[in-house]
Image (tube, rainbow, N blue to C red; front, side):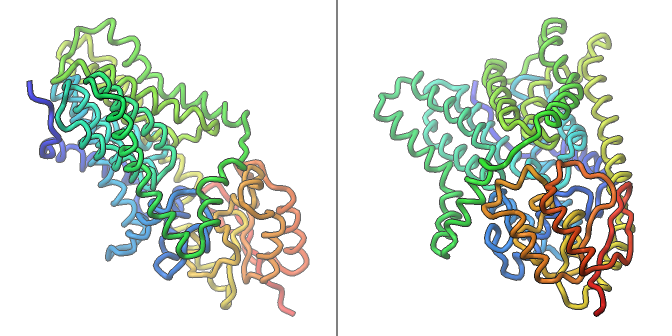
Length: 489
């Protein structure tokens, strides 16, 4: 039997996936403040258009490649919010097609097609449907996994070294979107080396080829880092990309609550993967022997999620790919008595895909509410900067206001878990930003999800009461924010 090939996209699947992805995201499209991370990435993309450098002018720990994607949204002749959201939709559909191809190895065609649909259905459940980083890096990771599984399925594959190089380069590109891809890269790389060893490669060839694969995986990051070093910003790059994560703390109690909720939500997958195989008739695909490789990939992806300890819902994005592939054998069953695993996966997924985005809209507000808030802020700036101490960083973008600090993502200065990760003293930076006398300061008047940095919060309150007056309160969904303007002397 010849090894499976990437082949052309399945047109029938495309006609299913595109409208399904659109309908599942309809309630989210066009909302500029639907998700806090995405609105910040788009802000960075906007400022990159005008020459700003990530990590230097606007600080974050995400890789440069992620911001480059949001910068690309401004190259399209549409509203940038819709541009990045449609771009994310396209990436998701392409990823679903690769999932279908992977699932075809262990399941019949109809079941494989449903596996791709399952991915699109479960993305909104974990808030990873529009522009979160896994939306974009899942595609190169899935392609890399397909290359690795394909080449391992055939002993003494003549193109093992070349396919391994291609897979590692894809993973390297993915790491420039999120560094946590490192875990999957290690797992897939070891699988490639194991294939070479089983094929009888001598130690020297294994070592040399392994080094070449590692270099391919690190090349994209090395190129970006070299560019920053040559521009004189090497220290800023290293601090943001590699050192800051070591200074970030997490609230274990909150993390465990999130993990418990996510584990409960994933129960349909647990039943499909661990209970169903012993109760259903076998379902065969093109290469059933690759099942162990797919399981190993799933374990590595799951380990990468668990190791970080914060367990935010969108961190499950990369785990969804192997889960959907591995669930394929329980899908599209001919026997009505064997369909309840599929019904559970699709039913719970559909319920979550409707309920979670609806809850987000209720909590975070509509596009009309945000537009009103933006106009209310803009009219009091009078050429000065804006400081969003608490609230939506999208206000910087929609008001075209200057940012009085490198730390435009509000949680970097207002949350205690980030205080040790910034490379600067959070209180001193907040004091410096306030000393520039921003025209408007935004501060929350309702509860916040993170443990607040009381030192910076106390400082902001003192300055507001001394030099500012509250002129409006804006409502965004269930959140309320006080808008403070400089007092007229």
